Amino acid sequence: MSKLLIDTNILVYGIDQDSTFFHQSRNILDGSDYQLVTTSKKLLEFLAVVTRSSGYDLKTELALEIIDDIIRGIDVLYPSKDSLAMFLELMNHYQPKGLKVHDFEIIRIGLAAGIHQVATFNEKDFKNVKEISLIEI
Image (cartoon, one colour):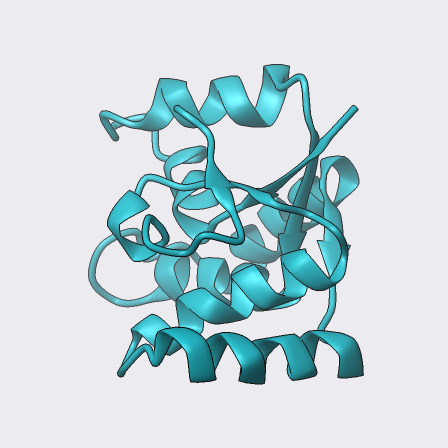
């Protein structure tokens, strides 16, 4: 079974029943033919999004319970020396600016773990990166 790196938006929309992306996210999270993987950074981003005062505004306790559920079904990757070296290579090659730098963090951690497929609703953030492929959602 191949591994699939999950972006933050899949996790967020996967709990938002009002989102137009809810069912697509749930299909990936519940019925995927992939071994699902995310990064520790993406879990932190998830918490930041769902607990902010505008938007989702979940209580921290509930958001942490959701994180517990997520990590039961998804492997979590952490930065390493290898992924940092790869990050610097990607930065030099693609030269992303501003918030795009964060997108390269998920890519570099995934690539360091041998993962080349990414699931996201923000395809524009990743589409020019030749080292990965985006799955159709």
